Image: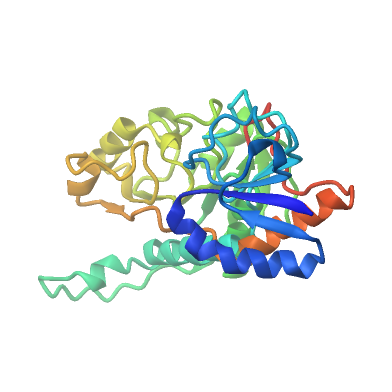
Length: 310
């Protein structure tokens, strides 16, 4: 009998209990799924970084911590966590949700839909948008989410350039990497999508110098992490017209403070961290598969590289 501790906020337990039990039942393992347990009896921790579990040292029997979030920046630096840490990679739910959100907002900016949705002066300007192949899109971050979004946009006809810290090869995407590659990826892009993790190396990666590389009037879409953007630099670029619009789903402080300039700026769209989320049914299957692997002495999947921070 293995003990699986669900360590997240209480309202998440109501959403996850039944899906997790179904997924664990399918593994054929004998298990006890609990929200409270003596730490020394716990084999696996199904974890959200905002849970009350912050000191992992008492969990002397634990074989792995299985994160429910795609982001691990709030746990990866925890020195008390020494067992394997897996991040949530849920292609069925989390990835699909991100692909839909990013595609929708890229098309919104590409087609200029805002001018027709909100048109109080009843302006009649019969000018169609260019076709997708004339609208270069750059995606910073070519992990599971960035690759999936890029490939969907490429299938729609957009010329997609992707950038990552290390070299990648992804069908349909021009892949660049390294410092020189970053400047090349940004230069002339008309739509920029940010899907990098939040690490010291990506802090304010979108700064004044890099905003200046984009095509004049470019749109920025950030469903990745708030600290990727230098807020002051973005506001200045919006005011100058270098950036035509920013659609932001993530912020340095959340909820976004009511007095933050993003709320009032006419060329900023604020969405409340809804680009995608972990879906209990599909995420539970990901968690259960890692537990099955642990009990079968097979390698865990989606392990976090502690040095890289993701």
